[in-house]
Image (cartoon, rainbow, N blue to C red; front, top):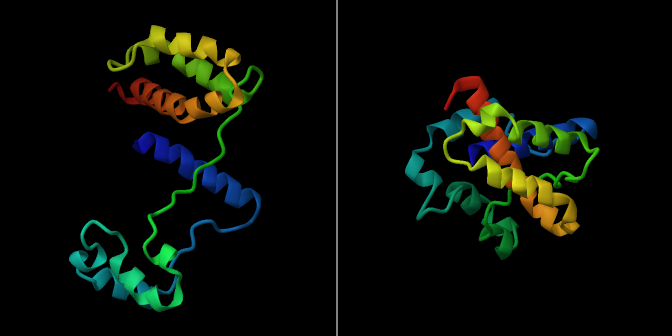
Length: 148
């Protein structure tokens, strides 16, 4: 999952830089950061609910669905997995490579069969394959760089 997250974070960085907006609003005040750093960890998450103290602080000012809501990750739009798209070509190269074949927990023949079947899929089905294919490509790249 870390490899999928990295792709989404990098996509968010590209989007916010391209449009000169900040998608992850930081707490820049150093005094606030020093205070937050001093808070005991059990106060930060209660019963598995993250950002407990922050939620309690803003409770009077936000709607219940925001207060009780789950974290929503920024998910980049899926790549158009069609021939001619540079990202699709990159996936093809990595998933058909010898380094990907060396990844012990993927069946490269099955992955190639999936790649070959993408053109026949409708757009929604291809989009659902995007995170899976990028995760597999990430493992292939890790294999080539670090030898899993």
